[in-house]
Image 1 (cartoon, one colour):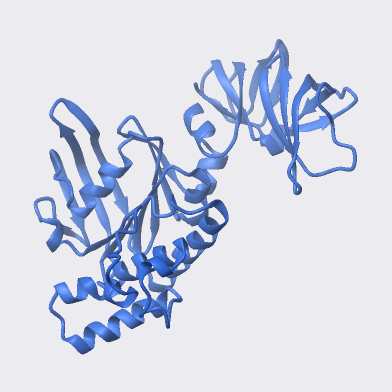
Image 2 (cartoon, helix red, strand yellow):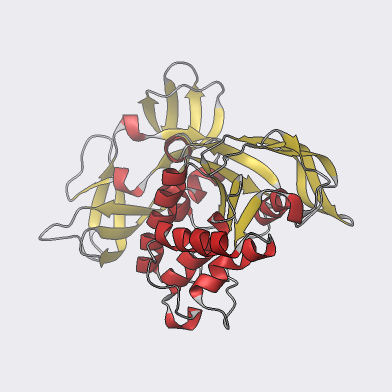
Length: 350
């Protein structure tokens, strides 16, 4: 398979007076899977369609594999797209669906047959070629759509919300398969989703978008552990955002939380209002007060087998905590005391 880089140089998109994408610059390295993540209307699907050639850029340049494709029609770009709806032909067999693009390219019949069968083998569907799409499960249909895309040997594989039609358990299984195929073939892939867990599970790098701009980009670990803003902290995984006042900036940070002084091993460059980011699993609950603990009351408790989730009311606002299962969990209405490790805390601006 051919691998290709993707580069945007000041690429923007407008529909009349509406700005769908502010001018942005980004680089996607060959052989990586990069996810465009964000809420509806943030510009992620527009970015994907600009790569595909399904939309034309209002400004800037688009390069794929080092070649300027800004004004090149979708037909002539070496990209393949897997759509949210799968877009399989219901009257064609699975093999005919996979072979469709190869036939359009007018390859010899024997080559079309061999490459289509190879594509099905790559996605674990050997022996399914004679079936109709209606005879397959949702996950199998999605794998057929992936096979149809990769047999065209694209420089870039584009995936637009590819798992949104699947139930949660199947979605987890299919995303693992897509990731394994991408890594095995060394494909460059651009993946669009609004599901944070999905993005973190499959990506080498995530580009989080907000209001038609890039809010932050980095590895899943970077975005989760070092969010650049309250928006990123809240969007990438669950987070408790607690209002604090930074009183001392430097290699360590002095702050006040509900008029209580705290010193955290965090670098901060300025004083003033900020938000303390604490992930739900970083909050420790105890029945007895501890030094520096924050009192709270359990508003709701949910036992989920492998964890217990608590919604808590505190003077710092509503908080969400996750703990390991215990024999005697706290119940609704219980008074508890919250602590956290200083090394777990992060600071962001609002």
